[in-house]
Amino acid sequence: MLHVFVVAWGLINVYSTQAFLEVPASQNEPLVNLECGKVRGTASNDGDAFSFRGIPYASPPIGGLRWQKPEPISPVNNNCWSGTLQANQNGDQCVQLDSQDIQKTVGSEDCLYLNVFTPSLNSSAKLPVMFWIHGGSLVVLNGSDPTYSPNQELANKLNVVFVSINYRLHAFGFLALKMLNSVSSTNTSGNYGLMDMVEALRWTQTNIHHFGGDSQKVTVFGQSSGGSAIVALLASPLCKNLFDKAWMLSASPVLNKTAEEAYVANEVFLNNTGCKDVTCLYNLTPEEVTLSAPFEEYPYWGTSDLGGLPEKGRFDGALPIVDGYVLHEAPFEAWVHGNGIDVPVLIGSTAQEVSQFITPPEAANWTWNDGNYSDYVRRSLGQFGDIVALTALKLYPKDVETPLFQLSTMISDARVTCGTDYLATIMASAYHSPVYRYIVTYTPKNQLSFHSIDIYGFFETLGMALGRNDEWENLVQKEAMAFVTGAHPATSTWTKYPTAVAELSNITTVAEGYHTAQCEFWLANNFFSYSWIN
Image 1: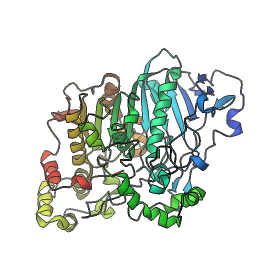
Image 2: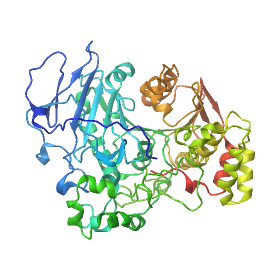
Image 3: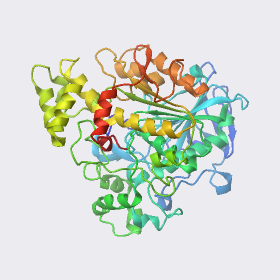
């Protein structure tokens, strides 16, 4: 979904002249010497945490580097900065639609920057590293949103080094067209955003020890489409030895589109641009590229339907694809064939993922007396047969909490929970490493277990989202950090999936499953294919 978390940043380009002015060192401006040169950051007031923002990890993907795999910043490529990089402001976010006016764009093509937050600059500290991949349906957002990314205070509290990144989005990050293959060094197209993530992980392997991090203890974690990206990374041969754990939050379980299928689906982009050749594509402005993307026409990159019950026969087009370079086969196949990245994995989702962007939105005002809940379910699921609709109403009966609670639970199960269970089942059966599964059922006052509640809790921004402090954040941090440091959640009874599923409510409880009967129903009736995508 085109989630409305977007903030329009007005940030400097760290390749500008000002970014490299020589400034005398001071106590509040820590200096680190990386492979590509010196980087100056900022320290907290008490000097116990440090931030380095806007560090380039690849050449700007502009001009002839548009729709190419990222060119790493390194002395070998002769593209390092000169002087001292002033890493005290976020790099620009990648080009995307303006959330305030979707006929306009914000951001820049020159956007491949990352941030580092650390409690130590001692290269022998060997602190665990957490590598953050933001969500936004792979079409919006950035790695620097203050409510949706790590910071130096959290790094100090948790004693961990954070890396957060920008990566190319929508058509810049995932456009697959046969005509682009001919100008690619990989003879493929698409998955550029995934390549950016891989390159940033390689940068982390090379440089993170300068920030006190241990390159052998890197946990990738991502929420929503950031979690979906991790599904791909866990199946990519490019990711061998780049991380040792993964935490996926509210990921999309479907990733099986072939390049050939994407070429056909993406012809609409060419039609929108009027281009007949590659030269024309490269001459398009960033705005023309963005506004030509099929957000609300097939293949529906905006995925605006995923907040409601499925429409029979409607399948949104995939952005990540099996391209033959980043992905040689679909993730499920890669894992079963022993070709995945076999590391401990923590897989989470929330009980009411769609509650904040539910379709129809008026469901928030329904009551049990007006009959709207039953009518909507019968009308929507009746496309799949009356028995399907009636069974769903039995499994999610009325007079339980509110219609919004029950409908958002039903949609979330059908679209996310049960498909994610299936993904976890495949992974757990194929991996030697442990796989852990949780569902967030915690409901703050006047709220449900909404999409992103667990990552807000981890980042300690749940209070900002709710307008008040929330102690539940401590529980999320406790479970996640135990996994990051010891490859097992903090609750000792929380065993590997599929023998156990944890519910993160006011406390952590562990059971043999969650909504088992409901998920058997959805999966038996072939609703996995209607799971979230992108």
